[in-house]
Length: 145
Length: 145
DNA sequence: GATGTCTGGTCTACTATAGAGACCGCCTCT
DNA sequence: AGAGGCGGTCTCTATAGTAGACCAGACATC
Image 1 (cartoon, rainbow over the protein chains, first blue to last red):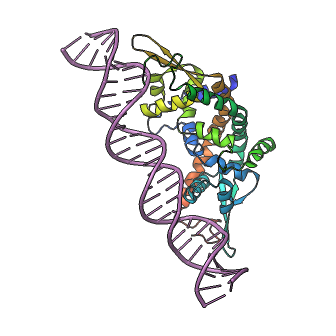
Image 2 (cartoon, rainbow over the protein chains, first blue to last red):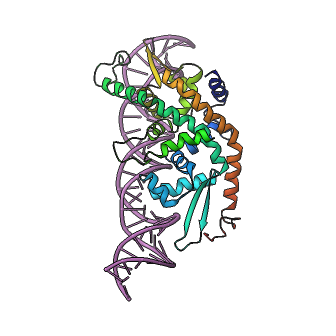
Image 3 (cartoon, helix red, strand yellow):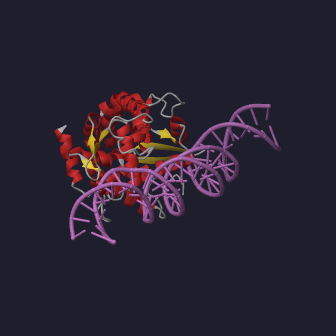
């Protein structure tokens, strides 16, 4: 825990809102992989290569447009690779690049956390939602309404 | 690495696109903390409590609207707590809740990865961007165009 | 031989979300 | 009296995401 704090503290030194050319790596990377679909793609590709429509089936509620775009972005950043085979209907296979592989470790940490704390989060959410409408214990004294 | 794979594999069993009531915890949690600002907030709060405008200054390029909303969502999920002090101009302090604290560890892993691979990603990105327009070295021999 | 299906996408709407910035009441300082 | 800080909310607009039609080529089916 104090190690985590050390790491995070180091990046709080960065102006988390950077001026213009000064880029905080965390911001930069988070913007890329922190979107709605990227991690899901990487998780799907973690076990084995997938074809375009396999990925579409695996995730199902992503639109083809977003699937294409997410895959392109991931390829652009060197996290996955794209292989086209000149079969009868040309098939395309997506694989995890080494850079993408290296992301699995930290991602697994997050996944484990999500799994572990899922219940707590939902409990907190239910508690919070149950509270709205009734008088809140202490935060509503300003009477926002 | 094989441990990470094991963890991730377990969640690939989930239909990553869930039908309706079946929720994949990973999806659920990722949607919440995987947005543009949540992790930045948590990082800022990792070292010490912050007031509303302190957070605004720390991140600067978040709008007040999004700052309020992100903070509310984080509070709702029990990751941070909100404390109102009835001072002259009422001041509000945001703190990391224990649940939020527990997120620091996995987040630090991601931050370290981001820092480590930042360069590789940018190199890949530059390579990809430079390639578009010219003939691609190997993935284009199959003739995608 | 026309139809349907599979492939991996693109394109055009439509809509939800994020961002910019004005505004608010209250208080202090000048 | 006026300016400015506090913690927000509100409205308007720009941007991003979604749904779903469409495409070309080849195969199997009817």
